[in-house]
Image (cartoon, rainbow, N blue to C red; front, top):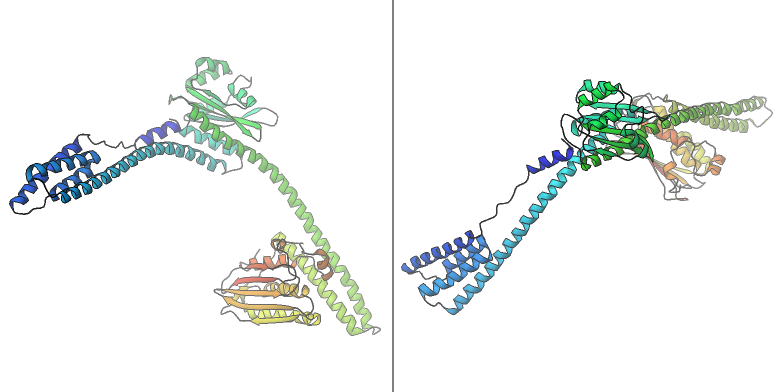
Length: 552
């Protein structure tokens, strides 16, 4: 049974036809209510209770409530007539008041019943819409299942085989998926059948070797074909041989649909669906449903081919990565060359023929700078290769921060940059690698000092926020543009390459810092109000939690 037939039969069980009231019944109720009201009035009169219109008022309300304007007006008229005939003329004021009040009530109940009628009609329209919505939902569910299966794998043979399996229990008794190979030949990618033996029997015949099958025309033209009834003459025209014809007759095709698989303007293949033992005949609705599924299947097939191309491109990118890593290794070795010259100056200084203090100071700074560049390059190489490891232990973060700041203090004092350090030790330790944590602090503080002009200030604050330790490094330096902020932690990226080159460095420190913070289970953010307004880095690390497992 097709999706549409299933939906129609399922929806019919939810339809509830409202019961229409009999048209004369409300008027009978109105007449009866006036009779009862008259009898009650007579009884009250017998006991000396004189309430001229109370019982008739109730009769009118009941009639209007049950029947609307017509029965209510009838009850009102009969009440006035009964009151005048049996009890004589009443006070005109009371009669007028009774008439006005009852008329208003009758009209109100009439409006209420009209509104209820409109609501009933709206409900009937809603039921019709619900039937259509259920049909659409069934269709959407079918297509959603197809989407899930199509996106489950990038192997298009496996994907299309799954699609054939989806079509067979829900829309077809037999389904085949054929794809066009790059050389133009047609290959059967998947076959599904309620009878596996018949599926194996049909799979031994190549799909349309002589081009007589309608599938060939569908692939060539890109237009679907619907065969509401498959005739024996049609089977004879496409049979490869007598055995093939026998198998097709044994399968008992009743109806068939063939739709192309088209993606980006190219026909990639075709899906063929057929009914057999169910005896059902396809409609244009079924054709539209299979066409919708074919669009998704074609996209999956095309994506699978694009994925293979992307895999090749990724392999090329990995090769480029390898070359880049080799370049970093070469650069690191090249950076060691100036160290040989530095050691040469050291030997000269030992001869006593130069200002030894100045020579030693110059050589030490040069050696430290070169060693830092080399270490940064090696760290990047370890990060890329996944070999950067930690030695996590409980660490007092306050001591790590103070030690890192102390190593930078001489440089800041020589430059005239004031270091404002405020450290509040967290209540618990931070589990991490002491050397790498000190490297994080050193990178941030030294970077701040480097880009802060003389007379500026670099603030370093450590405090506890909730269950985390927060390290804030802020400066009054040159700041960063909003456009560059998202790229601050990328390797080899510098906001101002010319200035950065003058100050030294390869643009690796912040990238390494972010990676180290991540290995410790923390996070790092950067903020700046713009050029000339300084920069603020914030590092958050968990307290008393083994956030790092010791490997990248």
